[in-house]
Length: 183
Image (cartoon, rainbow, N blue to C red; front, side, top):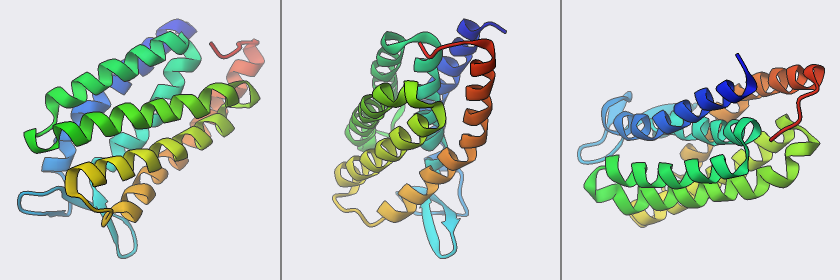
């Protein structure tokens, strides 16, 4: 598969994370709070809304879109994702969902872009950590007016980032062997 087509696959997966997140939060969890999110355990004694799985993954995928397709594709994906997030979010969460998505992905972009040439693993890790904290703080503040689930959200999203790092290392090494530079 060419690097460009690989980028389109990442773009599609990134886009699918938005509706998947909205579906997960209302349908999948070990505990579903009435009129609230479905929760999953992310550490002993620590719960988070189930969407942390796909939100953490989306941050990594956005970085891969940028690596394969370039900055403008990445910015376009962020803007389209924010619109999609507003379109598929439950009515009570539209503002929180779209705003958190837009601002956190732009924060991820701002950190990833200058670090990308220094190494994919470093860039993905640093930018995703910034993005997931920004996403969690904005979403919780706007949706619930408090940060009660902050630690759980950060830990849950961080798990997805950490689990993706071996793949990032493999992509980085494969690109290096092929002489491919980040877009």
